[in-house]
Length: 185
Image (cartoon, rainbow, N blue to C red; front, top):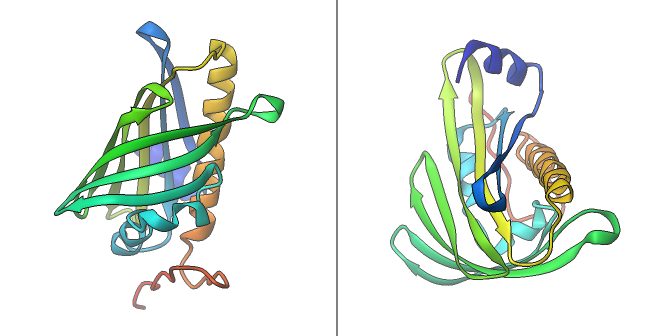
């Protein structure tokens, strides 16, 4: 993480980068600063059965299998924007590398390519966690590239904003599945 990114994150900016890759694959990357310790962010991200509680496009999420740090997860979600939204189904293989990385890849579902990772970083320059998301996505269904780019940008912004709101220390959500512990003062 360079100094410019660090300053933007400290101001509360959400950093987003979208790139077209060969064969109609879209690469989506984002970073956000969360004022919570990495252990709290990790706990929330790995509560897979409750992802729909804080990720706006996830309708349901269920662990099918767990073997150590490898998880098989079934998800149903929404993709698209406005009237172009579509319900998608997919099964992910997830590998956890505590406390820094969660990688995922589709093993079955509505995408030709769907793989990526969540990464948690810390920096002596700021208190909290920098949460990074990177994914490469190519749906099996019709998706004009410009619409895909717009949807990816909007989805990335929504995920980052919702995740950030839910991961603020001291905040409680009624009937929620988690409460992040604040830093010791």
